[in-house]
Image (tube, rainbow, N blue to C red; front, side):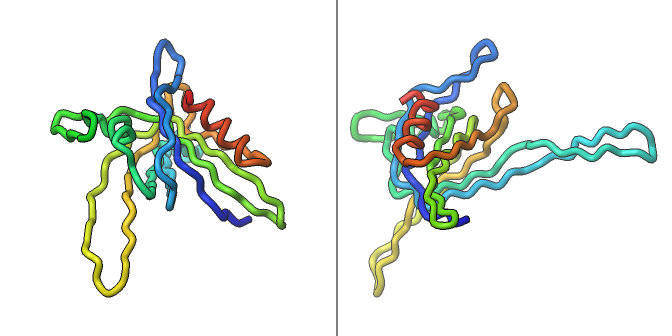
Length: 181
């Protein structure tokens, strides 16, 4: 198996109402450069008596790092709660990020057959990483924006949904539907 591509990420505002999870204001942003997800598990073993254990683990959270080619002002508003006024973005100490849904599509090649794998991360809280800028020296250095977040299970206990498609258009349509686009 070889993953050979990564498409535009999609984000949408996460909502939980009366036990129902939904998403709104979905948007595509930038081109994905790199996507990393690292699940964290918690030991929830049930100790029946002093000599007997029933080992078990469950997902506690997942660390997500996303490098992208660009981040629009609209995306900063959705992801970090920043105030957007026409041509300026205002980051205030009182801004609070809201959970979002995150969609990613990867291209996969197995034994010469190409498929597209769509991932929907149900509930992620992102934080902005620091910024780096530098002047052009002897060689051109490309720097891409990066955001980090923590995914947690949603109201129903789901944290990730994965689905395989034969075309990118089908995978994109599935992600768009999840995001309410």
